[in-house]
Length: 214
Image (cartoon, rainbow, N blue to C red):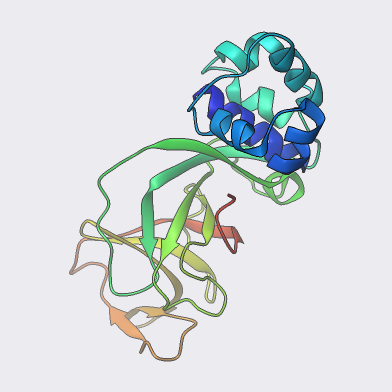
C-alpha cells in the first residue's frame, strides 16, 4: 500500500472530502489530490498536521507497514472493518467475465455486518460487471464475499465459477440440478448439472456497495 493509498483510505474513513482536508492544511485541492495519486508527498509541517487530522501515526503515514496497514486504517473510525479488495477481479452480472489479476487494496464494510458472519478471516471484496443483477447490483458494485459459506440456500446470492469465469447469481437447488437466476428479467434462468461441468460455488455474497468509493 503506497502513501497515497494510505492517505486516501484514511481520509475516506474519516468522512472528509479532499477539499475539506486541503482547506485545513492550507494547500490547494490539486496539491492534496496529487498526494493521494502518489504524484507528490506531504512533507514537514504538512505531513505532521495531516497525520493529526487523520488520527494516524506520522511514521505509519509516511512509511507504512504492510502487516499492520489494515488495522491502522480500521482504527481511524469505529463502525467499519477493512477487508481485502481484489480490485482486478470481477464477477460477471452478465454472460461471463474472465479474471487473471490480483491487485489487492482494502475496502470498508460495516462492522456490524462483518461481525454477523461465522467465518470472518477469509472475507474479501470484488467488483461486479454487467447488468444481469440490476436493479440490485449495478455495474461497478462492490461485493463482500464469504468463501467459507458455500452451502446453497434457495434465494441467496453467490459468486460461482464456471470453468475460468466468475459470475454472481441467485442459486436455487432442484431435483434436476441447480437453477442460476438473475434479478434482471431480461436474463432467462439457467439449469445446470454441477457434476457434468467445471462448476464451483466460490462463496456467499452477504453485503454490497452500489459503487466503488472514489
